[in-house]
Image 1 (cartoon, one colour):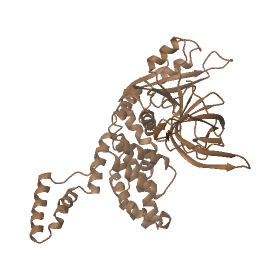
Image 2: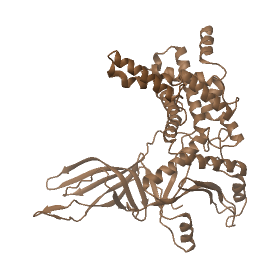
Image 3: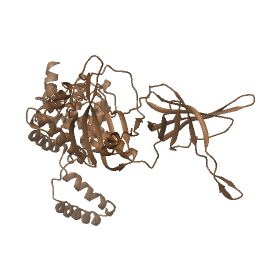
Length: 491
């Protein structure tokens, strides 16, 4: 990778060529030359930012205008989805200085400009913390045990996905005191069948990262992301021909919170899929392919999954509400009708005719909707049905019968906590709230994964996933009714 690493909060001087609007002269539009504006570029607290300055001449950057800056490092910074912020001028005795601050939601840095008409054929990146998940031991061990310079296979997987291919291979680093690799780490490459625009390519990368987040129950992010106009074969051929292909380092606007003592790697014992040996690798590829194949339908569910993981460690109404939204956003969980459509139509028509006779013709349109609601199965019955389906997938060691009642409790509690802080609840109400939240997240997580073709071992490991453990170790085996009785008896 030729990743250009921008030091956080460090400013680089550069110049921007800003296109100027045409002027109307004697009734005709006359093109105006572009204006050169100086300023600084920095990624400040996770936000790509330009601070532009022009002496004695007014300028204005409009919302969304792509900008290109050449910096003092000879990097070319291409900024898209721009948002102009503060603008103004500073006056002196004989001169004026005009300034404007601009931020960018998407920035590409390379030795050449990324033009708006360019398309992405390949993305390469790392996923920090996920090295163990992506470590295929036969390939990894062979690389670690071979001297640097020896030809050893580095590719762990080549997986077909909707719209392209995912490759995972390993990079090496060495030192002068050993002939063997000092470090071996995984790189992900996504090749697209057709050229994608920047937003489409970014969403494909996000889909992969969400898959690894689901595997690990941890919010993960892509790192050292690069986009290229070349396919995998074209990139390799360029190297064979002695060329250095131009790649573009990608920076998104992101929130940077307080520094955390993150672990070096995420755990694998709760992961439903990882590379490990050949059998686990095959299951990983099958799950990854299925994840991309259904990604459009599951967009809402995976979005709320990421939100649930980001709320880890918090106990508040937002977490419970998000868990119930996660359930509702998952395909295949809507209530079933307890009546046939023909019967609903017949009964609603009968009532509508009688309503007209009694002088209530204005409500006949609402009668059919009322019947549909009445015919829908209750939440309690719906959750019992879905929990029974989950037991068939994961087994009774992971899913208990009481899970349905805890999830129903979560939907009941949602209505009360949405209108008041939980600190005003009694201790019993608070304990019910906490357990209902954990149960709803476990239920949503299991629903999200139930159709993935994981291995038998992977289904067993799901029981150790972070979102399932909370239910399995502290809640399972006691329904809300039993818990309330036991709590009151202990008071």
